[in-house]
Image 1 (cartoon, rainbow, N blue to C red):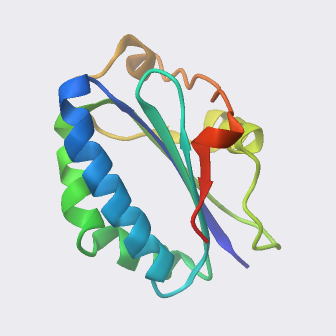
Image 2: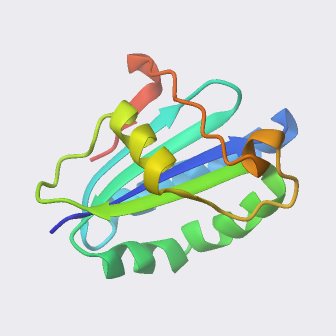
Length: 142
């Protein structure tokens, strides 16, 4: 069964955006070529918030990607760069990625915050704001 991973990150300052975007592009390219990847899409949301949604043939494939360069080193920077971060995983029968409202629903019900050094009030309260889905801001890589 395909393994789905959704992340939500909010970059806490415009000064971190250039580095974040560079790492995001590199990581998206890595994901597109990663062993076991079935599908990849990204969403640029409001207020420097970014969503990723990936489907994998197995959880181990996602974990291998997560630790590999450039994604692994980029994740460590997010502790400082982001003030909100959350993740949710699940398995499903089909390899198709969920729509963003479904990803948000799952994030609220089953997701968990990840560590950030400068948490926002929303992060502390574990509030996940629904994404504003603009077709021009939704990028499918695979």
